[in-house]
Length: 177
Image (cartoon, rainbow, N blue to C red; front, side):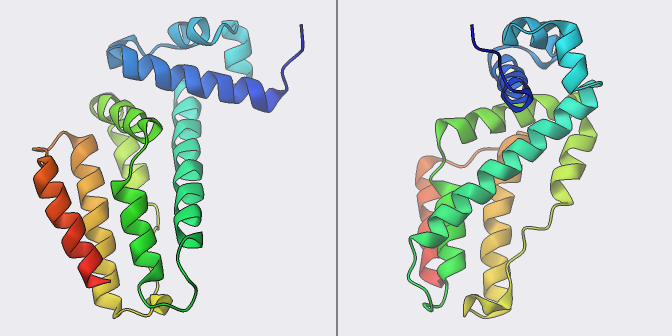
């Protein structure tokens, strides 16, 4: 049997925590349940994440990493020097969600009632555009804030938009780029 590296074990625990959140009620989000789901001893879990809050922080950091990788990939699809490049990439990264993105949203939605500070942490992140996108700064910011608003509404459990409404919003945002 091959021994896992500390980073592999940490990722296994993060994935188990996310899986547990997607499959079960947030009230069952316990360290014991996470260790069992990951097939790691509770002592092993506590070695990597001494508190539930440290695990939550790692989940947020993992989510951010995935987001930035996805956004970077979308930016690479845009020709350099074309105005609106960053905004178009941000729109695609927001609207073309993967199952992993949907699972993260489910996890955040379930955690928001138990750990209100989770949303505060996410809201304090600076994912703001810069005026070097070639679009007027106010338009670029409006596009980003609309994308962010759709995401925050989803994890906050606000009234969801229909698929047709989402398509209309996306089309309009793309037109603005």
